[in-house]
Image (cartoon, rainbow, N blue to C red; front, side, top):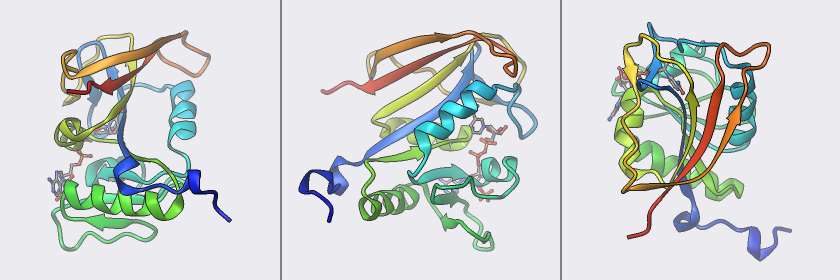
Length: 182
Ligand SMILES: NC(=O)c1ccc[n+]([C@@H]2O[C@H](COP(=O)([O-])OP(=O)(O)OC[C@H]3O[C@@H](n4cnc5c(N)ncnc54)[C@H](OP(=O)(O)O)[C@@H]3O)[C@@H](O)[C@H]2O)c1
């Protein structure tokens, strides 16, 4: 039986953005990420495991149109025809987040993870409670961007320097930001 303390209510469920971004704001190029960061993929997996993932249709295609194991997926598309096995579809960000919160409540987790791409991050940033940002220590060319993080809106909680491992193109700084209470 679930203890009372572990029951999640909609109001307690946080909207969390997870992103990796270069020094010049790039997150993507030609429908893919402009780097290989194996260490960061492991962190992404650990952070998101068991939680509902909300993502744009293009990001879903960029990961091979297959759901990542162990995480319910909600894919946002305006197309009525978008329908892929193993994932749910929502026709707006708001509907995707509502569905994510409902799944989180049903499954007893306290976060819905918004995982890109550029279009979805831009719309979700004003709604996010927490940002898990991997600052990739490089300047790269790209066509997809993350908006600047406004220090008046988000306070940085912690930051960890992560040297480039054998399977990482660049060193990173992993930072957590929380929406300031007004
Ligand atoms: N560095 C990172 O952490 C990271 C993370 C994720 C992705 N990425 C990169 O980001 C790039 C993809 O980002 P993107 O901006 O091109 O695409 P995206 O945000 O992944 O998806 C865009 C699509 O989402 C749907 N959409 C967006 N807003 C909507 C709304 N309000 N209502 C309904 N549907 C909506 C539309 O789908 P339809 O066209 O089907 O209507 C739109 O074409 C790739 O390069 C990927 O590798 C990077």
